[in-house]
Image (cartoon, rainbow, N blue to C red):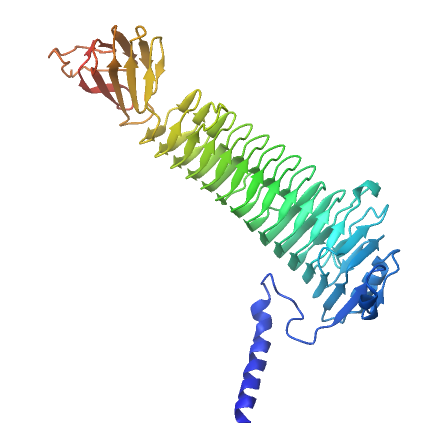
Length: 517
């Protein structure tokens, strides 16, 4: 008897502590500790067996009245309204107070927006003072957009809610948003399918939210919009989500802080796969796919402290990854192939690094540049990347102040003509088809090394070096010491080489077996 009493007391103690432990978890239910107030509502077409155990039975007209009556019948401590299988016709908005769960039995529970509802299916009860601990689980909403003439025809809206769980919902064909959440926190959305509306999800001024295994597709605008209106959204975490086939962007983060995306799919959107813009700082995009979008795969613009790592960005109409006006940026380990314009673009970026990326072409699609750097991008490093088979250049750097070293595929071979040589890597001269009269422009950083070597020759070639000074004089292969500026190197035979280093203002010769004067 004593043992049974001890076990009982332990179980009671655990049950008493479980409420605080579960409070902020996505599987939290306010009634999970026992004494659950549950009211069952049947649709007009629910089975007879279901109707026999229901507390309310709808008649197929204005079923929202019965559902709201069930919600209002719950005690002040909250409870659960269970909607059985069948179709519920909704002709007016329903409101949900604190500590209430609305739960269906799966896709067979359908809330259908009646003609001219022109409103949301659900909203929280107190949009001035706010609500807490609301859950919606396991049912479908059909927004019937064709029969809605005005808005706000959202699937649901929550304003000033703390502790919101949305799990296992299917929301389709809303005139406006499937899910609209404003000025709320501790939001968990999981295992949902959102489709064929204006926006899948629209968040404004939402903090501490987690989105897991959500599909948003076929929207006329963005699959997900995170807006800066009313204050930036903060601390958002996305994992294993799909945003595809939308009319504009898969996801648009506009002014969000501390956003992370992991193992998500942003593909086949009419516009950009995912865009983080307008002071969306502390953003991480990791292990995601962005393919076959009508714009960039990933766009980072007017942001700071951003990490783009291990993503696959290919077959996009513009760049695989586009970075513009970004500070403190790391782009590493991405595969950007077969994009129409560029693998990775840096425009007006500061303090950035691109390392370990693969940028090239695997198909007949012509990606112009592997990596393109332009327009006042400074303090950048391009290192350890694999770049091949790009139609214009594997790396094209149009600004100073960028370090390029130890990349595969950046060496070049030039033939007859008057090319401008890369200032990084090595250049092989092949004059079998005619003389080369190339030019090497200024370097981009102090200590940059440039190697030029004749690999095949039938005629001599000359390379003009701008800002070259050999006042101290390093002997040429014949022992002569140039005086004054040595600016032109002449290559007459295979293996003749010129190795130079940029001092910050001029190229100086380290070693030469060609003739230069």
